[in-house]
Length: 102
Ligand SMILES: [Zn+2]
Image 1 (cartoon, rainbow, N blue to C red):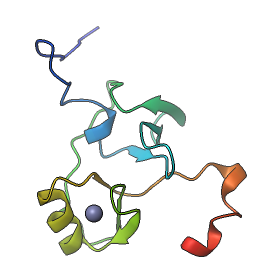
Image 2 (cartoon, rainbow, N blue to C red):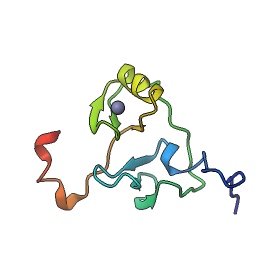
Image 3 (cartoon, helix red, strand yellow):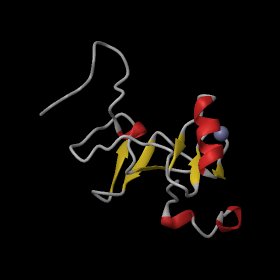
């Protein structure tokens, strides 16, 4: 299997930088792969990997601030080193509890 890890460093090509990954709202080292429909760790990787970009005019999710962002805000947060994704993943079991936050 093609493993793109370089040296001992953190793998750049991994779930945490993939457009298909939805980090868990409360435990962002875990996330939902929207292609395979499974939970993965942020440094996992699979052949469906697609680099995340903030070009699309839509809402994004900042894990660092735990808030929803526009595309303009998403680029701004990402440039400050925040972890920004297309959306967050809420465990179906806790959805009701935090429904008001959305
Ligand atoms: Zn942020």
